[in-house]
Amino acid sequence: MKKNTAPKKENIIIYHSDCYDGFSAAWAAWKKFGSKAEYLPVKHDLLPPAGLENKNIFFVDFCYPAPIMEKISQSAKSVTVIDHHISEKETTEKFPGLFSLDHSGAVLSWIFFHPKKEIPLFLKYIEDRDLWYFRLQKSKEISSYLEFFNFDFNLWSKLSKEIENPIKRKEWIKNGSLILKYEDKRIEEIIAEGGELVQFEGRKIFAVNSILFRSELGNLLCRRHPPFAIIWRKEPDSLKFSLRGNGSIDVSKIAKKYGGGGHFSAASFRLPPDSKLPWLIKNKF
Image (cartoon, rainbow, N blue to C red; front, side, top):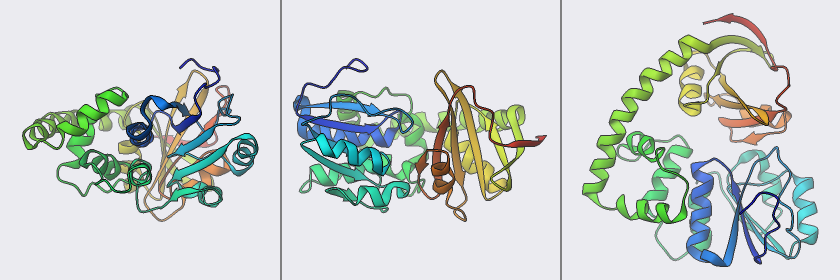
């Protein structure tokens, strides 16, 4: 669907853009609605899509701040919110739907739209990475392999079937293990090339400029220099900042201060592309 084109169908699925959990949450909705709904990827720092009046709107793995949600709900036919981000907990719980910190957006979406069906193993792996648990067998290898695929609902259905096959799953793990070795090497190179010790929000933390491996870099650096780290990059329309914490500080509160949001230990925010970086550089790595 073209940008800024008003949706024509009555059911609208709004989901977290550029996110495996967000897309998988939309896929769970697609497995119910198919072509009877329109699927719109969104970002926190951009205006909501136009043409939401008199629509049944389902927010999956996403929720705008309270003022925007209230405005949307005034003209929509219905608003349902399925989310797990603690930064918008109070807003989410004002609407029908499902909120829980125990599951990812994708699994919550499946539970909501398919209450009598077993949660697919595919979504369990998506959740395992999104919540940074890695409790499932060879979860890191499988997650690394999945990053090579484009966001496509039909492809997601194919992958969901493949992962149930033990032989195919072994192939995924084999491919993923090779990818992980490469990623580990590149992560150390990125830190050496672009890492900085900065003063941000009253703390000295590590910040790295990278378009790759945001979560992996952030989690490694916040362990090396707690309590959190920042991975940032310049995009055409904004500066994107990803925060990863070691569990001792709520980074979603920091992100919310800058107009973003997220989880207790993983959050993000954006600033205009010409903004000054919000920290003082102490020294390079």
